[in-house]
Length: 413
Ligand code: ASP
Ligand code: MG
Image (tube, rainbow, N blue to C red):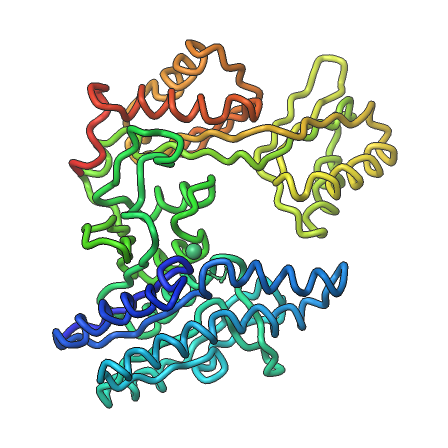
């Protein structure tokens, strides 16, 4: 008998028909003798619909009340799925976050999980019940409802799988797994059979939307084996886990594209200690995530500082930068609103030389200008004009991962 945590995303539970289909799938696993904990997202579009309702009433709804509102989406789908499973004859009990003491801090809208008490789930499973849990929500020390950030039902599922020491955490979605690139942009993208936590974290952080970043981090920390698969088919899905030797043989596992970036340059900053800290301190305090940062001192003792931010943060970041530039007597602030970040990810980059050169050659052959470059041990990212983002992704995918290239087929790992 295994203990399986299954998470179903919004499209998987997006209608009454879909909830019936999910119930059949859960019932089959239970009928096979395994214990099942199901985590659900809100029905597709529901969380956005709720946020929009609030937006019609206030320009800045209080985050505490916004959480009370948006957490209802998952409550609805949890109850509906439990009702259906019971109708099929399977004893089932639904749980909201407070009933599991899924404790978080008080950062409404983006709360961090502190602890989970597995005891009620364990009791329910021992009694032969299926447990259905509302994802995305938590409860803070005051007992107030919090939410864990957009897409964070994945995180709920991984946290429960870790607390229960589950045998697997299956993430059901509307695609058949993790792909080598976005199939909507790259027709030749292929499903990966397996991928390491590290690669998945890079890909999730770089724009692949299939898994929420924090959930992969948590899975890695607690060594929770993840499987990403479709609730619309029986296809095997992608396994995400610890790396093994064969994974290093694959030079590039995936190409990602984030088209939602902007670039800011603070020009002519004096080249002395403390100025980068002065600039980035207030930006971090405002909760804006700065990504690639490039600084290069020139001979005249001045430096240009260029970095990227998510496009939603551009206006706020520009305001802060202009203030700061005046304070530190920088020459000025420039920005480019529409840039894209294209990245290649692969464990094999640790051992294969020349990957960056190949990447730059592919972009050069397409006539795409590279504006910024950043690397880590297992990824190389470039910033390009947003117009060329999709072209860059396709070209890189087909050159480095397409059939006939000397990169090992990702599917064969
Ligand atoms: N319903 C939430 C959202 O849309 C959480 C989730 O779906 O994972 O962000
Ligand atoms: Mg999701």
